[in-house]
Amino acid sequence: MVRHWWLARREIRGWYRKLLINGIGLVLCASILTFMLVFKFFEGGWATLLITGTLILLAILVKRHYKGVGVLLRRLDSLVHTPEFSAAGLSPEATAIAVPEPKFDPNGKTAVLLVSGFNGMGLHTLFGILRMFGGVFKNFVFVQVGVLDVGNFKGVQEVGHLETQIKCDVERYVQLMKRNGFYAEGICEIGVDVIDEVMKITPRIIERFPQAMFFGGQLVFEKDSFVHRLLHNHIVFALQRKLYHQGIPFVILPIRVY
Image 1: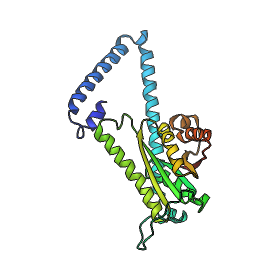
Image 2 (image 1 turned 45 degrees about the vertical axis):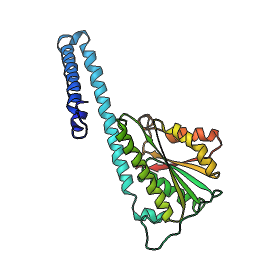
Image 3 (image 1 turned 135 degrees about the horizontal axis):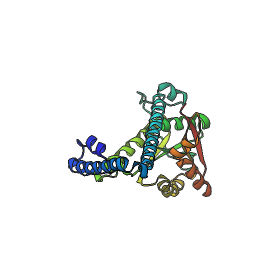
Image 4 (image 1 turned 90 degrees about the horizontal axis):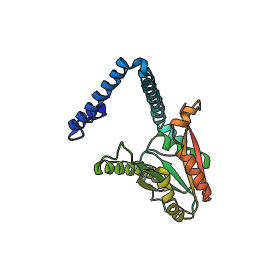
């Protein structure tokens, strides 16, 4: 927390008070740990050192893992260039030729794509739909849920920034599909649980698009291990089970990051 307040000193007013409080806590904890090691080492201090060291090592390994995954995701984002769009039959930019506004067909097949931002994962999932299903889908609906957590739930301003960001991300998908002759809509929600928010809006989507089919992407690592299953959420699998119980099709597309 001391490090956090120091890094956020230019953004948060009164940061020095919070830094002082957490700094005092840091000094007290360090003093207690030092006392235990010096005076009580053979009476249980070694166990304290062992447990603390193990937890620190575990935290370092987890952070290292997420950094490695971040590198893979940035590589995935970099793969989204013009040839990828062309292979999927899309034009990434607006052209000089005016494209008529796509008409809404309520009886047309609809692809409902769950996204977490305008990024490589979302675009590759979209490309996969277009490659595998061709011209089956006439309508596209992009759904993004902004998750409120300790990182962004710091006030009304931060929540507003989150809402603006997800609206911007979804609108980029919508405009991309409209430029290429598809009818598209975006749905944005904010909540503490992605699954709950998606299930709340599902009846509304099905009512407007009776022929809807849901899609989601799932990261696939070269070596699937217990660590990957533990550290990475499987929201799409949980959503798939819930939607299956309602008789709604949900297709999970693999997104390889190796």
